[in-house]
Length: 416
Ligand SMILES: NC(=O)c1ccc[n+]([C@@H]2O[C@H](COP(=O)([O-])OP(=O)(O)OC[C@H]3O[C@@H](n4cnc5c(N)ncnc54)[C@H](O)[C@@H]3O)[C@@H](O)[C@H]2O)c1
Image 1 (tube, helix red, strand yellow):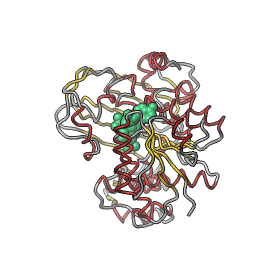
Image 2: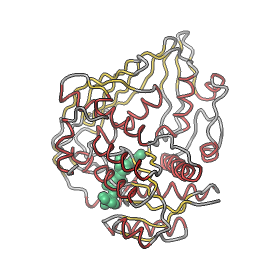
Image 3: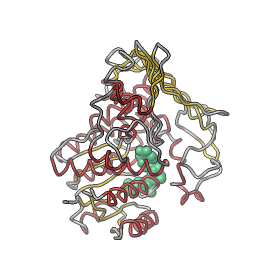
């Protein structure tokens, strides 16, 4: 099979997870990508990832501190997986496009809407593929949830609730996730929720919201972060940090279809953590399936009937996972699965990497292209801007930068 020569740019926690995604793809017999280089100005991180790759994939990729040198010395590189923190996404992606490379970029697509627009312009100039790594929608449980919504098993949807609160005053994964000028949790975590809202229920028109920073000082968490992926950097974690990014948002989300949404996310919730998503239709309620835990969607109908697991499948006779997802997860029609988080995680990353190469080789557009990646960001940013302006804000206003007060100081600092 033809293989797309790829580099991982950004060798921190997510760079390591993309490597595990590559390993999964190599082992599946469907590998259409080949890791040839890794790049990070922190050469200790790049070297570590290259060593890991040598052990996992059987070949050590070249190690580079910058992409220009990388492309000069490894001209075979055709694509990059950008796994830097969000602050660097637009500049790294723009450089990649200017160097003639295809891009798979981690979410959020950029740190600000201006950054996202600059990135899209660079992609259009270069005529290369841009795929945004929104992995949650690729989970088989998200796919079956979407099929159930489309089949109107709960009738016509009219109300969506997405409410979560957790984390208290602890540092969530890394200190940069609490700095406004690096992308706080309301963007870094929130863009996942935003993409899933767009995936399940279609476009959003406007948001009316309030955001606030409650925990101005955060303390080191007791565990090493997501499934130990960040254990290598645990010694670098300060005991406390000053937070500058808002940690709590309460929003009313108006979907283009007329569905009403209520989206609350707080990363300052003390005591018992809370998280719930539920979609109400005119005949019943649907709790979407989990991401990376195999939890089946659950439907409650008015006649008190509960549907979950395989019992859901008779309601979606045409539901079928794509070939790659079915091969990796072991079935074409899954309504639940049993896998530990890290195993499911790397399968979703393998699917994204496969799709990137497939788009390059076959001239296809990725499922989450630059426009859709920007839309999910706009859904978050409409919430931030609405709070500053104290009025509802449309996603179109945000995308075309008619208003951009919230992000103005970040753009000024970035010089864009
Ligand atoms: N999809 C998911 O489930 C998921 C999960 C975690 C993180 N992420 C995303 O992955 C990205 C990275 O997050 P992380 O947790 O790995 O961060 P991290 O801080 O662990 O790692 C970031 C790495 O990028 C490097 N870097 C910074 N600027 C760079 C540049 N200009 N060129 C090359 N490398 C550069 C840093 O030195 C560091 O090694 C973020 O966008 C985050 O939102 C996604």
